[in-house]
Image 1 (cartoon, rainbow, N blue to C red):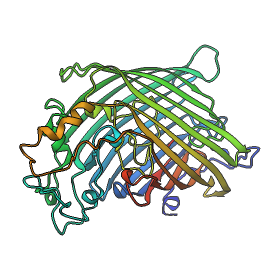
Image 2: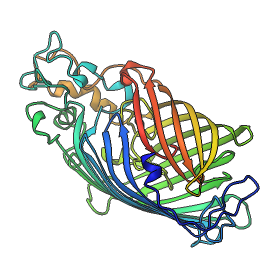
Image 3: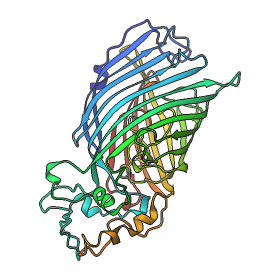
Image 4: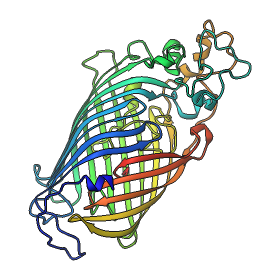
Length: 453
């Protein structure tokens, strides 16, 4: 309700379509307070504005263009400065996507590489104990008695992102497009820089000391991307589809001509979305299957953590785990050169109503997510890492870096609630739990914007 009362919208008349919805024309804008919550990031507060232009209304609920600006922060130390826009009126039979963002994350989650090959010690993460039986942490002091949580699975990261992508219809073939894009990312990685964790070692430091993360990449770097791909899009609506297919196959070339450390690489990213009407537009079964692999070259660890799609709905485009991929699973905990994932939802539009001259819908979406590493990253170095640290950790009689477990599916389940305005603006609250305790414990909540696909 705080969001709806914050809405300011231009009234352009109340022409109704055959469904009894108000046809929006011209400008429609909403300056809103950002009030959200993410179990991994904390409470979110700030401000944003969504600006739509529907033209003459003939394409409603599709629009001519949309621009969004956001400035917000989370209580656990993350901040967002971002602007993105979709332009459907510039490229004939196509669209343009532009995104600029700067992200500060003072406690960025880092659980290691290759999924279950990286051990997860929940007692360290929750700091339920200062010492695990049989281990002496000196000189690596992992937790401190009396603290409420540990910084072992965290680091400090800043990211600048600039992305521009376009698609254009191929000849007279309906719904089939070619896509091209450019991207630039700057990453800044440092040890966790929060005073209360000064005396604790972090997993990131162990990865650096053992050489899994190399000297020339441990502080981050620059990634320039050139994208080319094919897009098939038959969705009936952009942000709240009830039927249709979306398929994207993208090759991303990233020549290392800025840092010149030899990290030239080529990746392939493919996603398939299917929206199947079960009961008209009231009930839709939706699923997304995705995969990304490095098919040539040498990728730095920080670039591997990004999903290289042409277009995306969520703010973060990180590795599997968390609010945008594996809800309920530890954020960014499934990292490898190749990752595959599945998201499935049953979207039930419970009721429709009109309020402040807008069309509203309340929807429920029970969900299931699954993902796993399909192409490992420096697994042999990971296996040997603790042996390289023995001169510094001779009293630690268990492995903090390699678990000797085979990779398998990381799964979670939950349910979400949506408040949708004009089939384009979606306020989202989702709750999910990992089905394996190695992926995290407890029910996680994510309150923000948009469906994840």
